[in-house]
Each structure stands twice: as structure tokens, then as C-alpha cells.
Image 1 (cartoon, helix red, strand yellow):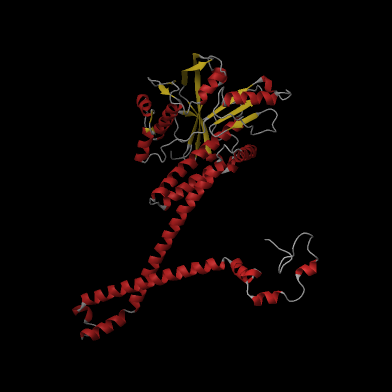
Image 2 (cartoon, one colour):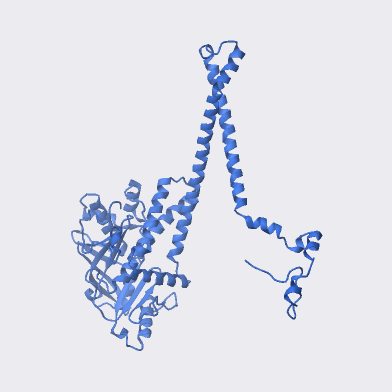
Length: 487
């Protein structure tokens, strides 16, 4: 989506016009809103071996970034779920983005038909509704329901919008599921609070028979009133009982919005990474404007200092956690890969620019040479054909044009070859001058590789071993050297 973040979104209410705790001087970086049409979710799930059905309202929050990416966060509050939420329901909803057979039904106000499946069709419906309103059209709920269906290659409508030039990327990127729980047993004075948190995290994030039999790792081990578990596709926050944030509908607004910000970052990096990898593999042509657009997206979405210092500390903790956990793919590594791809495109553009500069320089040089030799060329041709210089263009104009074009072509070929040879020689000299250590190493060759004259010259006078003292016991003295310096 293009344009200023938050502009013309008539389907949302701006309960908070800027990103929570963002620096004031950069408040135009992102904007927050809430989707106004009411959404209600129902669906079956297995509880203690029996089938049950839950129902709950869904609150959808938006974070629109100036780069053009939008983060959607559908939220189900545990105090509004019927029946009361338990571990079985939480594990069932945790697969809402990945399990296509979840059989959820979302009733959206104004739409006659429900959106069925997992959470992805709901996200497609809301995004397409916002995009239609953004463009100034009135959305048709029935058409949006048909468009939001997930096919083999994702949402087909998104691919059509990319082909029409209204979108740049057809594959949405998701962080996963975030769970927030409060428990009175996690009070700061409780002795077994850590054990209770570890038990809850293993029950929620691993399940009764997990494929990955590894306990979740707490990101903030030094915090005594909060336990935070973050993996690549899921996050869990455990706290003692506390009130929910009235605008964000979450228990912990700082960590929730940090994950939203990192979700936008992951979406931007993965989208650019997918395009650059495909073009590198196919050898496709690339324009400078496209590379500049990628640079703008990556630069605006990877700025940690857009956030307040308090949330910035959480970013550092999360980065340290991802680096130390071998099962986690660090987001910083994805950023390094994307920047490496962009650097490769930049080098290709610079090489193409150097070639264009060589051609232009050769053309200018050849033209100047031909213009400078024009009088000499006319004089020689007039003597060869036996006419005066004044009558030469009249009687032998075609011959004069052929000779001029031939001289221009020869001058261009010679000038271009000279420029290329000079540039290659300059690059070679620059590479040699950038390696002064290589010349020094040739002068300071080891004794075993030098001639007898060098050994004789080195053995004059007292040896370094004699100056320093006798070698340690059990070690043979070095030949020609007593101290080794390593730099």
C-alpha cells in the first residue's frame, strides 16, 4: 500500500494516532488504528478427548508503517471467550495460521456469508477491505469473501493485484501466535513462581506429546514478575494478575508492540529477500529505481532507534536470545543476507555505469579527434581525387561521409580500447597499492626460504637467543630467531 500511513482508512478508528512509545520527532513513521466492523469467531476444538465449541469476539488492531507494510493483529481476549479458555483451546488456536483444517468461522458485520477456514482468510478479508477503501472504492462484502479464500499458492486475489501493479508483494509474512496469560501463582513473592512458569510454558508451547522435547527458554531470566518466551512462530507472556491495556487489549503493551514492529521488519526483509534471490538466480535485469526502492524499505524498517529506549532494551534482549538459541533463526542474519543481495545488485549497476561511462568517453574522444582532423582529411582527399578543397563536398560528398564515418569508428574503437586498458591498469595498481603488507612480507622472507647470503648476513653478531637468555628447558632453540611477534 502506498501513501501516508493511516490516510483514507475509513474503516478504522484512530484511537491512537501514533505508535505507542515511539519518539515524537518520528511519529510519522507508523500509525495505529482499530478495525471498526465487529468480528465474531466460532469453531470446534477437542477438549479432554471430547469435541467442544467456543465463541468469542475478535478485535483487530492495525499498525501501518510508512514503508507501505501493514501489520494486522486479530486479538481474542481470554475474559471474553465462552467457555472459559484453557490449555486445550489455547493449543488449538495456536495453530490458527498454519492448520488449514481448523474449521473456524468468522462472522463480519455487513457480510452475509462467514469467512471459514483458519485465520489467514480473515486476514485476507480485512486487508482487501482496507485496500479497496484506500483506493476510494466501496467494497462488496460478498466479493471480498470470495477473494479472501486461500488456494494452493495463497490468496489468488493478491497475485492479481501484484500483476495489476497495485501491490508489490503477494505473499504475506506472519510472526505467528502470541499468547498472554495471567496466573495468581506467579506473584513476585512466590517461591515456586519459576517452576510454575516453566510448567505453563511447556504445557502451552509444547503440548502433551510434543515433537520438540525441549523446554522453552525465558528471554528475561532476571525479571521476577514477568516471564517471556519468544520463538520464531510463537510467543508467550506470563504475568501475575493485572489489568488489560484499554487501547491495545493486551496485558503487556511494550512486548506486544515490539513483536508488531518486528513483524513488519520480518515482512519487509522476507519480501525483499524473496525478490532479490529470485533475480539473482534467474539473472534477470534490474533497474536502479528498483534497487533504490528496496534500500528505502530495508532502511526504514530496520531502524531500532525509532522506538523508545525502554523498548529498545527489549530488542537487545530478544536479539541476544535469538543468537544464543541454536533452534532460532535470527532476524539480524536475514537482514545481513538482504543487504548482501542489495550490495551485489549495486555492484552490477556500478559495473554497468562504468561501461556506459567508458562508451560515452570513447564517443566524445573520437568525435573530438575527427573534428580536429577534418581539415587534414579534406586536404588529403582533395589531392587524391584531384579537386579543390572547396569543391570536394559538392562532387565527392558521399566519399567524404564514408571516410569521416570510418575515421570516427576507428577513433572510437581505439579510444575505447585505450580507456578500458587504462582503467584495468589503474585497478591493478590500486589493488597492489592496497596491499603494502604483501611487499613487506616478500622482503621479510623466512630464513628457510631465503638464500645462503641472507642466512650469512643474519648470523653476524650475537643471536637473539644469546641476548635474551638460554631457552627454556626441554625446548630447542629456534634457528635464527628467539622471539616471535604476531600481529
